[in-house]
Image (cartoon, rainbow, N blue to C red; front, side, top):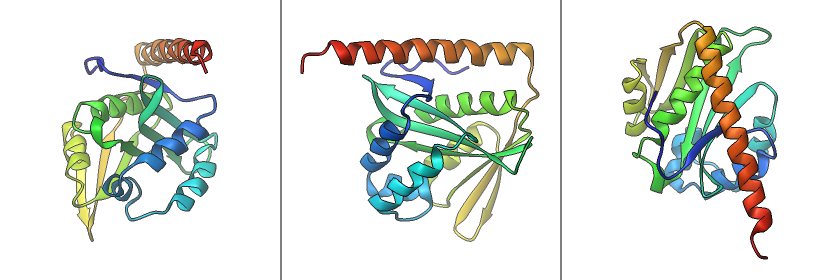
Length: 190
């Protein structure tokens, strides 16, 4: 697994993920928004997208710095029931790009996909999104270039007791960190 990030923590998002996720997406610069959504999107689009992202079919991991969400990996199942394929989407605010955040988020996303029986993870990006293409290559994705976009496919390993344990430990650590963040916010003077 990737080295821990020194200036932030990655954790699964459970409670009130709409507010922090919306705020994160609204902070993205023009290029980062276009890379995340495959084209230019408005603030209104993001507000509507957040409603969709809060469904139970998504597993969302966030990268937090000082309690503020700065990067997100979203794992969304493709199909109904026990899907064997999923899509992953990433957004990282500019100051934290090219610092290992995407790698750490993709590792956590692949672990979540593996433990949910996902066999194939799809990642789509624009053809000029060099960071995403590099990230996909780092994980040996099969890349297909098509009409201005790139589809990367990564095969997930089968779940094992150890992989399930790794996710449980990461989730437990993430939950504890989230609770400490809440406590720290409550103790700050107004």
